[in-house]
Image 1 (cartoon, helix red, strand yellow):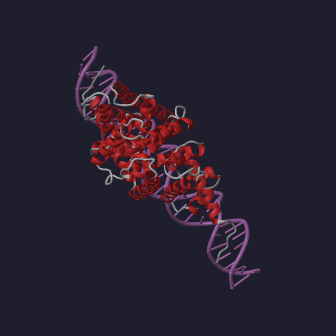
Image 2 (cartoon, chains in turn purple, brown, cyan, blue; image 1 turned 90 degrees about the vertical axis):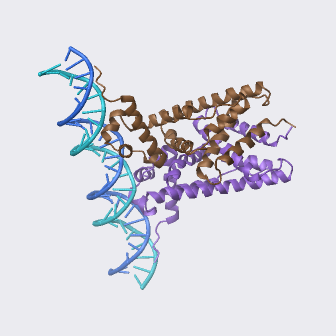
Image 3 (tube, protein in one colour; image 1 turned 135 degrees about the horizontal axis):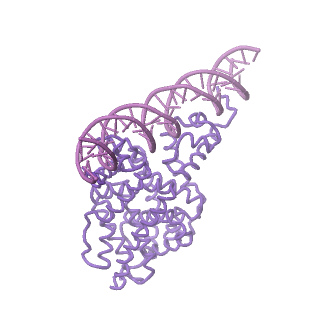
Length: 198
Length: 198
DNA sequence: ATACATGCCAAACGTTTGTTATGTACGGAG
DNA sequence: CTCCGTACATAACAAACGTTTGGCATGTAT
């Protein structure tokens, strides 16, 4: 019933890795069955064996994106509240080569996601989830008096907007925005949130 | 020497318009010679007659992006300084259907721009120019005492980051972020910049 | 009137694409 | 040993792609 001379999941993971590699180098515009097969050193037959078609390949790529975002080696929050929020932001930014590759794919996914209704909905949900994560830290910070009271949802949107936008600029100008510069900008931004009204 | 029975520039503009239309609907992943020709109701021969190849088509699309960004019907700055900065930000955001289409193309261009060295460099320059524009307003605002002193370049980066990020969220969740909501977020953000240190 | 450059279509070219079919090797089940 | 389903390679396929070519207009220049 189950002749398994290779570990299916493990092999599928290999394909997944090849997809990642192709995307990081050539973007979604360069994602083809053959490119993935070449990156894997195999035939396209192997690729189709584990992923029915290109659509499934793309959908899976976006899944990896979320999984890696959640499981990447990230710094633990040193403290709840504002410090946690700052850490969450830093964990998103392209501060390391791996994180840069992830963000490059993330940003690249927007073109295809905006053109495909299914992917569009999936992406919208992902961002909603990210905002929810930020929001808990924001509300905790408000409870601790580290942030002024106000609509935590709106503030989460502002924080995510700033972070996303910084990702884009960092990707397009890595020399001007190396890791320390990004960190400094985050600190500047966070500081502007904590200031009280005059 | 110059038999011109049709206005070359005008016709080229028509092609340009067709490119725009295809991009707004299908993104850069759906930009093909035939799609452009179809949107124009002509043959692919016409397209190649005005643009040597696909690369030139893409490069031109990114040029339009900048031209339209500069020449779009935008609100005039009601006053120099902070008010001008706010207006600049609002002029970028997808507050109207036209502006939404432009931003959809803008965001979509990142995938291809990140994969092509030439386009990459061109995009980097564009963002540099946008930041320069923001910076003049920021410095004026600082001179007027509307903003606290500080590195105007870094502040411009922060402002552009926030604006870009808000564009992305608005595109992926237009129902949650209609024009008034976007305006409100900009005002919240600007307010956070003006607050003095406690 | 002749010559020539431009505008554009229609069609074809060779390549690349996603997908599917065929074949082989092989480990477990009976 | 005999099946049989899994794991691929090979290769074919039609469709779509970017690009090129040949030709027919139509206008200006001489």
